[in-house]
Length: 462
Ligand code: GDP
Ligand code: ZN
Image 1 (cartoon, protein in one colour):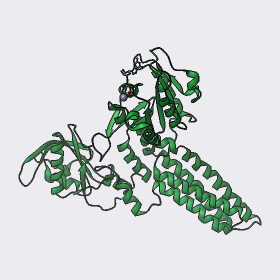
Image 2 (tube, rainbow, N blue to C red):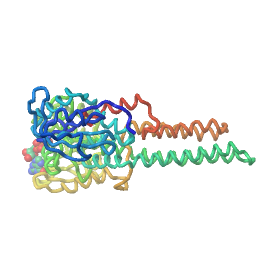
Image 3 (spheres, helix red, strand yellow):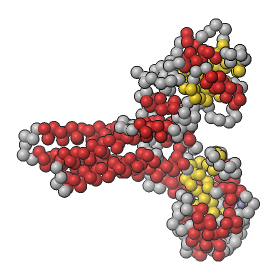
Image 4 (spheres, protein in one colour):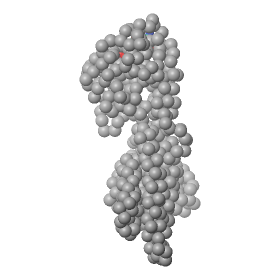
């Protein structure tokens, strides 16, 4: 049964152009409110079957002014996104008309939904768990195919399932401990129980640690591998950037809330999402190194997960090249010897004093030679040590990572407690805490305030 809520409405399509916009209404009065503004002869939405679509017009009931020609979808609880009655109005007249339709709906009894409120209701009405709700948010934000896949997998409940299994495991152990305590028929029951607790704590801790190991990669999948293209002027950085962007269908997004010239560019190289940082500097006619100097580019490097360091191999190594080699030391880096179509004047022996030869790729952006090798190298770096399992469960959410770390602490307390000979019922408390902490990931033991805060991060209309 759904909890009682008022009826909410919002535009559920992303802002911007696009012919169609959807106004979504959810709540007990969704159909009544829609009927106040929907006109199609004598037809009334409230008499329509669930999951049906209806043609008509949205009209201001006070003035009889026609606002837009629409298709309206009627979806009755409980088989809806929120598990409440939902009406979706598909408008055709562009952004102005979508806004007008929403305004009319709001004037006729609905309340403007808070960001994430539709998804919050889906959660509160028990349709999805918290990690699935967070995955919805990630889908909205996903910027690359891999990130989208990760979010969708989580939406399918991969992580939830795993966590639920771990919790069940802990619960079984706690139940067994309880039995042992209640029926201390055997002399060695205390010792048996201690061993049971310590073994289970170690086992589940190992599984949580394995899950956490995916965290770095999960974050990268979601946000892209922060990649800096570095090199002195004229070596071919802009050319490389363009070739990456062109060949791999870049997704360019404006960073919300900043000026228009701050642009993050995403490109997928063999499935590895790269977030190209500081591309504005590369795009400008002046070059980043020239403009801000080696010292400053050292700072820009701090954020980089991957450095593409470009040299012009038709010239000998310069002092500036060597400074850049030093500045990028310790980073995951690929050395690109560009302009291989020209006569080679760069001394490989000298370069090999600074870098391992297997991190070097020779390219020509003019003839496109070596670009395939470059892409392979990027993928190789990223997937190193990873089996590349398609359906692996990744953890990428900061809140989840924090909770998993706390869970490990709780297990450590269990292990330490038993080793120090603490009474079993005290150790039980830490074991129960681990169980609670894992539950917070799926929302099975989560406080109201956290829920409110989480859902306020959503886009409007979801
Ligand atoms: P940046 O200053 O490092 O960004 O270098 P640009 O990408 O602006 O390139 C400088 C010049 O080198 C341009 O005239 C490019 O056309 C040229 N260039 C870039 N890559 C190659 C290459 O592989 N071979 C040759 N021959 N010229 C290149
Ligand atoms: Zn340039």
